[in-house]
Length: 259
Ligand SMILES: [Zn+2]
Image 1 (cartoon, helix red, strand yellow):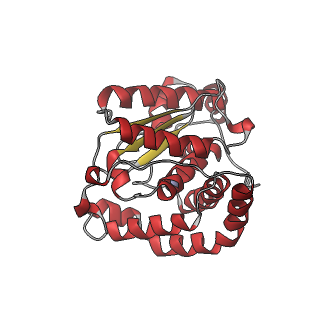
Image 2 (cartoon, helix red, strand yellow):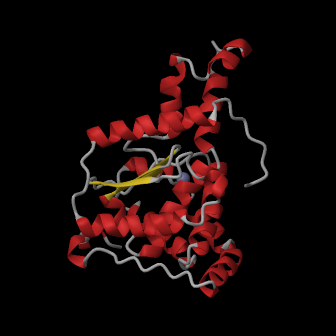
């Protein structure tokens, strides 16, 4: 998708398997939102994004699963194997369907671009105890399970909140913005989203600020990518794409969290 050469030591099947297992444990440990309107809304936006994902990148069984977690941290993540999680706190920053589409496009792009696999592979290589034979035998070995889970980016702090490397973030921003445009969401909303994220950094925990040093750069990049994204958007609209996803009622959103 980017034409860049990638180091991926773990099979896609293994990544999918780990993604599915990690999601199952998040489901067991987390609190799922029971709010019908919120769930419907998130599913509507997610579906619109997933419809533009090329066939070759769809999960083996063709099915994606998206769940809303009751969690005030503004986060969202996507895992290999077709699993997507959105925290309720994310909807306080991504306040429109287009902004949520920007978040989901970005997270789905990380999965399709195999960023988790690259991150896992780098940590396997960096492990001094590893030799060529054990790599060949064993990215699937039990010793690597923890590394793979870490590389997948599972857990409360991964996803939007704890970004991948700058290179991976750039790629996910660009491809994610194209996805949202192809789905019929106005791509300038990605710019607004990240501006709101940067604003959120003002009184958010230190961790947020330290992991988001380049929000300004990101906003500039997304602006620079706009002409290309607008072409996709106009083509999508001309083809009749106009996703109608109804955000949950206003009273649900915490007004204090709004910029
Ligand atoms: Zn990211």
